[in-house]
Structure formats: C-alpha cells, structure tokens
Amino acid sequence: MNNQQVTSGVQPEPTRIPGSLAAVTVFGVPVRFHFTFVLMLIFLLFIGIGDKQSGPSTALYIAALFFSVLLHELGHTLVARHYGIKTLEIVMFPIGGVSRPERQPKPAEELPISLAGPLVNFLIAAALIAWMATQQGWVALEGLKEPTDANLAERIAAGNLALFLFNLLPAYPMDGGRILRSLLALRRPVEEATRIAAGAGQSLAILMGLAGLLWGNFMLVFIALFVYLGAFQEGAAAKGRIFTSGFLVNAAMITDFRTLTHGQSIRDAGNLLLSTSQHDFPVVHGESVIGLLTRSALVQAMLNHGPDAYVSGAMAREFPRLSPEMPLGEALPQLAGPAACALVMDSDDRLVGMLTSEHLSEFILLRQVTAAQKKLHPSHD
Ligand code: ZN
Image (cartoon, rainbow, N blue to C red; front, side, top):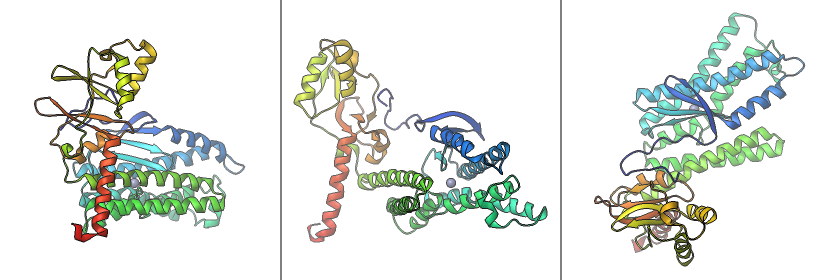
C-alpha cells in the first residue's frame, strides 16, 4: 500500500482481494479464485470419490455446485448493473462467492440486488425438480445421504436449496443480512442498520461455531469462522462511518508532528523515531513535501545501507494525500491498513497535518465514549 498514490477526491485504483488467483471474465466481470477455494476443490475431489460414486460423477457434482454459486453471483451482478453499479470482481471462496460492487448500493437498490442471488439458486433447484418429475419417479430424501451416480441431479437440486436457505439467513455477511439491513434502513440510519445486521451475523457465527464443536462438524466451524470475520469487518467499518460522519479530516488530523529534510540521514530519522511517538515522517524540501518515510522503510534502509544513507533514498515519493476539507468518512478506505499513514495537504499543496490509522481509531474511540457519556448523562449535553 505504501507505493500507492491516492489523491483526494479521486477514487483509489480498485485493489484486488488479497490471496486471489488468476481471473476468467464473465459478462465483463473478472472472476477470481481465492486460494482456499482451490484447496477445497482438491480436498472435495479426494474425499468425494467413494464406492458408489465414480470420479467423473464427483467432478460433475462439484462443477455443478461451482456453476450454481457463480450464477448466484451473476444474479447480483446483473441486477446491480440495472442500477448502474459496476461489479469490480467476483471472488470465489470455499463457502461461496463474493461480489465487490464499485459503490455501496442505496437501501432501496440493495434489497433487489441481494434477493437476486438466492433467487437464482431457487430457480435452478425448481427447474431440476421439475425436470426430474417428468423423467423418473421421486427419490426419497434419505437416499441423498449416500451419494451415488444415480442421484446426481437430486444432489445438485438439494445443494441449490441449501445455498438458497443458507444465503437467506438474516445475518451479515449473508444476503439475508443485506436484506435485513435494507429493510431496517427504511426506518433508521443505514449505519445503525448495518451494525444490527453485522451483530446478528456475529451472534449466528458464534452459535454455528459452538454447534460445530459440539457435533464434531469441523466444516461448520470453518464456515462459522468465515461468517464471523465477514460480520466483524463490516461491523467495524460501519462503526467507523457512524462515528466519523459529520466531521472533516481537519477535525481528526495530527497537527503537532515532526518532519525530516531530504538531506538528513537515516541516523537522524532513527533518533527522531526514538524521541517521538511518531512512526512516519514527512520529508520536506523547503516549503514542499517530497516524500514520506515510514518506519518499515527506515528499518529497511538502516539494514541495507547503514545509518549514513540519506532519507531521500529511502522515502516513498508517492503517498496517500488527503484534503483537510474532505469528509472524514471518505478518508476511511485510505487508512484501512493497520499501519496506514496519509498526509493532509491544503489546496496550495502545503502540508497541514497527518492522519494515521492508529490516530483515526483513537478519534473513533473518543467519539464513541462521548456518545456513551451523553446517553448516561443527558443533562451534560
Ligand atoms: Zn449472494
């Protein structure tokens, strides 16, 4: 992230979900495979081939479920496109696909977009069941426990019904959680609606995890972990947006900080790192900022070139920039990393402040405490 230049007002280049592999393009949308998805495919192929099920039938079953998940995501993609929202990428994870829209849909748009995916699975199951009804008789559900070549179509139909029901669970990050959020958002602020849906997701994940441990079903524990992480991330992002709304960057930025000049040495920078609580140092030349020296770049330069090297050789020349007048909420994506740092520059390109992810979380914490204090003691308002 350090070498990525982000200018205020301009959207950052869409970054890929880390760990995702090569893409195929469907309807103009890149579809990538997360490495855990590839691992799962290999695992399923190994455990799937049994006495009554041939290799080709196992492969066909897995391929059919994969296409069902892909069609589910394309359902979201096409309805989102109807509202003018482009999908940046679809990433296939072991428990399903994830579509990354170019912007957050409005609650009224999110409802049909979220419904479209599960609806695709329902239609696949319905079509298969209708087809089977015209062909042979009906296979009893108990027969599905034992996969055979004969009940392949039944198993694909059952898999799609499972996808339909699982995705409609009213808990974020499942589609049902998004539906819940869009319905809640009709009557309350969207961030609060997100927090409730994410909270439901975390509770559901904990229940699923406990049930999985109790029954010794490790697949369920695995799914619970994914759900928990997804819900946690969205909940934290929603909290960030709630407590920064109404504030500009200049309300939260650090104004008391030290800078380095381009002629100073790595030794000087190291001394400054020790004598201050700062981790990142803007490098200036006269009035203008020419770079940013992060702690990791400083350590790297110390290792490779020794303490007498110049900071200008180690600093990043491109760094995230923010405008002091931009809404703080818009700066959140640029400070998403654990050690992210952005420089705040005014319209004359003068350095007026700094903002780090650490400082931003302190700002959010203080806003949270203030809000809690107002609830406890309304008279102090
Ligand atoms: Zn979905």
